Length: 311
Image (tube, rainbow, N blue to C red; front, side, top):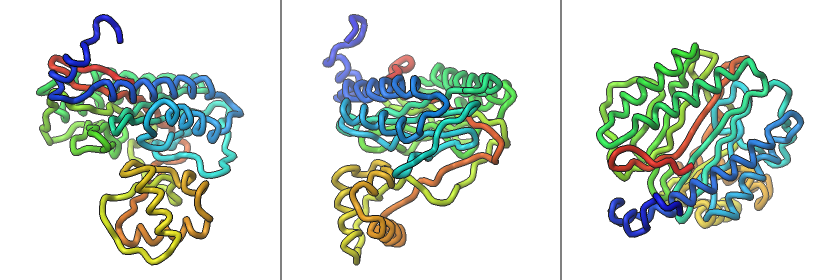
């Protein structure tokens, strides 16, 4: 810990007994994983190699992942992670986003960067980076989240692009990746206030398109809901046992389950649990073909007079 950082006792007193060290450690794990990923983003690299490298680093340096490593290429905005045996490779001129999260005993981090392999997309990358920086500078106790959203929107539009309307930053709580408060990428009417000792993932998305994303078929990320449901099939019971034990209520990759279950059992379990309302899918979100989306994201703790960035 640096000399100018507060002691553990001071942190706990200011944070109403909360141990901020775990939130910080989760932030460091995500940051270091992304540093490794950044060096891998080049033409010819398999997406699966990046995903597995990031996830391996986080699993070795934190309690676990708060969601699977996401990689978004070009018009993809969110929720793509490699399926089992993914052969997709980065191409010359691609716009590549890597998004990952770690948790330490439920204390979460969430961070992302975008790299433009085509210099023509540098301004798009800068637009999301600037918007995220400005949003962080504005976050403090008493700040209105809709005002921050308006500043995000203005920053991205002033650069000549559109913010993604359906995607937002979000409050983090222990074992809760998306808590009730949201940091919109556009202006809005709700005047929800930021409060001291809250934690937020500040993420912004800039698009060359309309700023609207749609669901693609065949989701690759799922999440269990905290409800009990009757299940009929042995494979579903096995799926439930693994998901509850290993991932709790965090999103997980279909790939992770495919490594442990027969394909037929996996597909049957997903269908049964979705039908029973116990499993939700996080569909891949995409802009129109031919458009490009950049993302910048950091996790922050709201302090008495501003914020502390953990990632």
